Amino acid sequence: MATKTQAETVTKPNETMQIVIVGHVDHGKSTLLGRLYADTGALPDGKLEKVQAICRQQGKEFEYAFLFDAFLEEQEQGITIDTARTFFVWKGRQYIIIDAPGHKEFLKNMISGAARAEAALLVIDALEGVKEQSRKHGLLLSMLGIRQVAVVVNKMDLVGYRKDVFDGIEKEYREYLDQLKVRPEQVIPVSAKLGDNVAERGARMAWYAGPTVLEALEGFDKETVRAQQALRLPIQDVYKFDARRILAGRIASGRLKVGDRLVFSPSNKTATIKTIEAFNIEPPLAESQAGQSVGVTLDEQIFVERGEIASHEADLPCVSTAFRANVFWLGRRPLEQDTTYALRLGTREVDCQVAIIHRIVDAADLAHQQGGAFVGRNQVADVTIRTRSPIAFDLSSSFETTGRFVLVDGYDISGGGIITEMVHDEQEFLRDEARRRDFAWVKGEVSAEARAQHYGHRAAIVLLTGSAHAAKTFLARTLEVLLVAEGRHAYLLEGENLRRGLDADLAAPDKGDALEMVRRYGEVARLLADTGLIVVSTTNPFGLPHRVVVESIRTLAHPTPVLVVHMSNAPEEPPPHTDLNLVGPENFEESARLVVEELKRRGVLAQAIGAKPTFQYSI
Ligand code: GDP
Image (tube, rainbow, N blue to C red; front, side):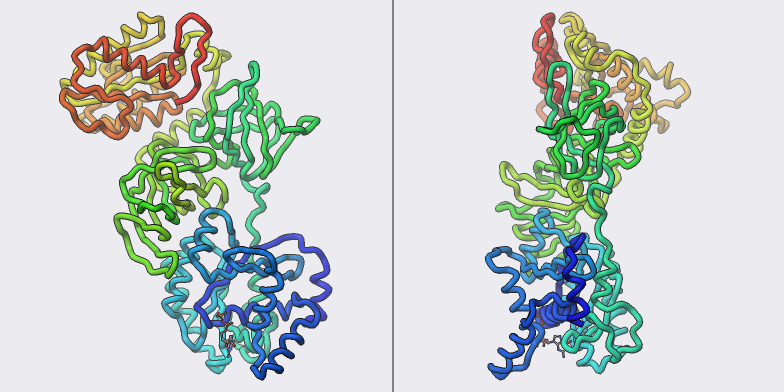
C-alpha cells in the first residue's frame, strides 16, 4: 500500500478539507488515524519500523495509536493550538484532521469561526455499542451544523465481524441522529487495529458493500469555494469624495463586476456598479471576488449605510427580526432571556433579545437540558433571537461570514453564534411586498439626495402613539404647524381621510379590515416620504395595538426613518418601539419642539435652514 501511495503524495494537493474526529475515549480514534496515515503513505520513511522497534525494545505490543501519537508530535512541533491537527494527502486532497478532545475549545473555535470542520468522523466501539458519549457527540455535531458525517463502527474484530451487531448499532444510532437532524452519509464497519475497511476492504466483512473510511473521506464534498457562492458584501463604510460616494467593504463571498445591479438589504435599495476602486491597484478593476476589500461607486446616489449587505437580486440574504441560532456563551454574567444585548453580524450592529431558550448544552461534558431561563458561561444554547429592527443574514450552513454573529453585553463580546434557521416574523408578508415593490420601483430624475438638499431635510415619518385622550391628534397638528412655520415640508396624514376614499371598498376596521387599512396607509406614507416630505400622523384610526401599526408602517416605509413618539397622561412604561416618551405634556408647543430637536439629533433635519444643510444620513 505504502509504495502505491508514495507517488500520490508527491503531487501537490489542489484542495484541503478539514475533518473533525470525535468519539468516546478508547473507542479507537488514534488507532484509526494511525492506520489511515500508515496506509496512505503519509508517514515519513522508516517511521513505522522505528515505532515497531521501540515497542519490541520495551516489550509491549505495537499499536497504531502509538504511531499516531508520534506523528502528532512531529507535525505539531512548535505549534501551540488547543485542538490537535494532523494532516495527510490522498488523491490530490489534503485532509486536515482536527482531534477535539476538549469539546469546549473546539465548540468555541467553531462557533467563533476560528476553526472550521467541513465534515466529521464519529467513532463508536462495536463491543460497547452506542454510549451516552456517542449520543453527546451526535449532539455536538448537530449544534455545530456539520452536515457531512460518517459513522465508524470500530473494533468489529471483537464482535466476530457480525453483521447483526453492526446492523443493531447502525439502526439505533441513525434513529438518534435523525432526531437531531444529522444524517450520516455512511456507517462503516471497521477494525482499525487490523485494517479492515480503513484504507482497504479486507475479506472478513464480505457482507458489507459500502465504502471504506478512506472512500468516505473522498466522498465528502468540498464546501463551495467562497468565490463561487452568491455575492455578499457587508458595507463597512460609506466615504464621500466630492459628489461621489464610495461604498467600502470586504467581499465575504461571491464576486461582483462593473455593471452588476446590487441590492442592499435590509433597505431594498438598488443601484448599478459604476466603478470598482481598490487600494493601490491600477488600472481600476473590472471585477472583484471573495476575500478582497473593495470600494464601489454606483450609477446613482442612494443612501446606503454601514451594516447593509449588498447582493445580487437573484440570490438575496434572509431579512427578518428573528432567527434560530446556536450560541456559545462566554460572558461573566449569564445570557438571559428578555435582556437587551448588541448583536454584530457582518458590519451591522442591532439590539437584540433572546426570546426562547430551546436547549442548553454544557460545553465541557456535553450534558444537556431542555429549555431554561438563562445560559451560563461555557454553555452552548439553541435559542431564538429577536432583533429590534430587521437584519439581513444567512444560514451558517450556506454562508460562513453572514451566517455568524457575536453578542455584546455592555462593552464585552460575550458570545458567538451561528444561525441555523430563519424565523418568520409577523412582518414577513409586508416585507416581501416592500421588497417586490422596491425592486420594481420606477425612479424619476430627481434623487432623494437632491430633494433633501433642496428642502433642508430628508423624508421621515413621525408617528404618535398612546392611549385615547392623550391628545395625540393635537400634538400632531401643532407639530405640522411648527415644522411648516420653520420652512420644512411637513404634512399631516390623517388616517380618517383615507377611510372614505382609498379605503372606501373596505368595511369598518372592527370588521377585520384594519390590517389592510394599515397596509394602505403605510403605502401612502411611503409615497409621501418618497416626495421628500415629513409625514406626521397618529395611530388612532386603525383600532389595532400600537405595536402592530408601528411595526407595519416601519416595514413598509423602510428605510425611511419612522420616529415613534409615545404620549401618556400619567407616567407609564412606554412600549419598546418608542423613540421619544412624553408624559402628560401641558405645553404642546414645547412638546412639538422636543420632537423637532429629536429629528435634528437623528439627522433628519439639517441643523440650520438656509445655509447648505450638512445633515448626516443616519436613521
Ligand atoms: P482513542 O482513545 O479513541 O484514541 O482510542 P485508541 O485508538 O487509543 O484505542 C484504544 C484501545 O482500543 C487501544 O488499546 C487499541 O489497540 C484498541 N483498539 C482500537 N481499535 C481497535 C480495533 O479495531 N480492534 C481491537 N481489537 N482493538 C482496537
